Image (tube, rainbow, N blue to C red; front, side, top):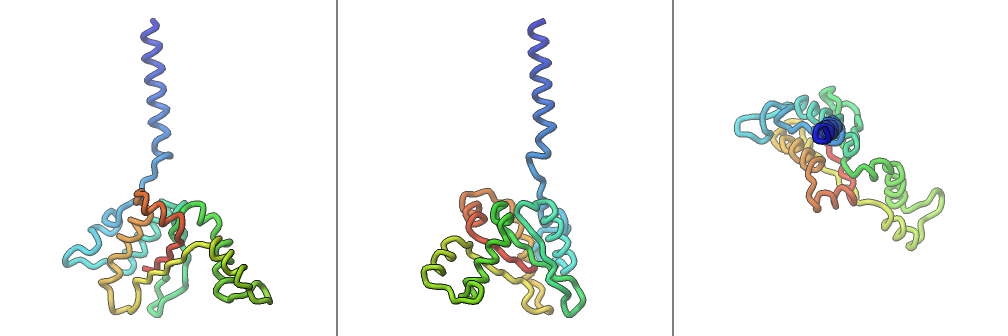
Amino acid sequence: MHRSWRSIAIAATLAIGSAALPSAQRSIPSPASVIGWEPCADYKLATYEQIEDYVRTLAAAAPDRVRLVDMGKTTEGRTQVLAIVSSEDNLRQLDHFKSIARRLALARDGTRPLTDEEARALAGEGKAVVWIDFGLHSIEVAHAQTAPLLLYKAVTDESAEMRFIRDNVILLLVA
């Protein structure tokens, strides 16, 4: 009898543990799973719409690391999206970091100029902001093919280096 209770307890623990796994582990779609092939594959070019669909799909799957901003319409009437990639903590404080960046860019705090000491303090408190734009010219399409790959790596890579980057950088990616 003692043995059967132990078996039941083990089975219940495993069932509860496995039921919790889907919520604990996120499923991030790869670019190939959304686009239909690996970006940059020979003789394959994803359309802007396919790349945008991937960016939106990835952002929906990883809201703790990606925030989307609709930038407006392109000259061809397409919605242009900006993916903001960083750590969950940085995204939660995004307005604070935007305020720091704005004050540093204008070298002002409201109506008065920043002192050197204030600027240094703000720079130490802020985050590096990196803008990567894959859509330089509408007739140049090949370079945009790498955008889904970079976005996927920035969101899913759990190496110490990539965690450090997410913790210290706010990546602005325009596909």
